Length: 288
View 1 (cartoon, helix red, strand yellow):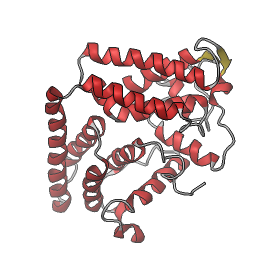
View 2: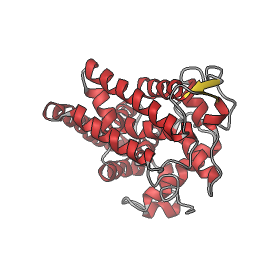
View 3: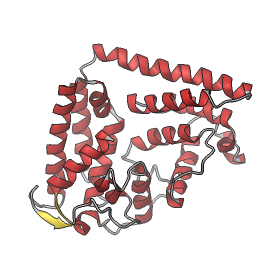
View 4: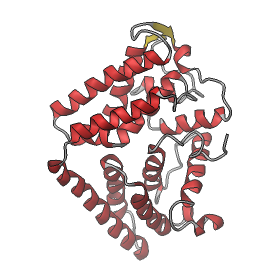
């Protein structure tokens, strides 16, 4: 297997770069130590290096100066936004972070100017997406996106992860893309209709992936065991980084599925069906 994450575990997961962009924005001018575990930090650093070869400013990668220079990192975020075409969730999270950073810029004129410019750009992107909502059929786009992701799941693109991990990766893809945008920007009825359908489809596909009925219960190890494969740890660590936002008390199923280097959460059912797992993950991922 390739040592590159985007040619290995990430080759079918388009949200990796978008989540990385948000992570990098959260890390700008961060005074507290990162809450990431060492293997999660390693995954983020590897993805950063890989994206530097696809976006401008990669000349700074060799010197290692990019991650220690807030102004340059902000410039690179602007380039990443153009490269990755992030959706409403990513844009709103970055815009919120940039807005908070403006109050912390202090006397650094260069940083303040860069923050003001980039914050304005991301606010404009967010406003544009929200305005365009009136001209778009968001539910139709969401259904199309959902089918695309589920087809990748059915086609075995996520098979190097555990059965429950495949479901989680699919949900992350949906959360960061058009499906998640429709859930965020749609009416309450539209959002609940989309999520109800997703609960059903995810339950059915998770059950099909292990040749079981949706209501068949198995011990949790059955759902969380990753099949042996070349580069196994890259897959497990990438999943852990994708789920680094989850909390063992508030999102016990998502946390247990992604953070398998830890003991499972107390709230993780020990005997569970595909229906129970998939529905819990849909709710935890989209209600976080």
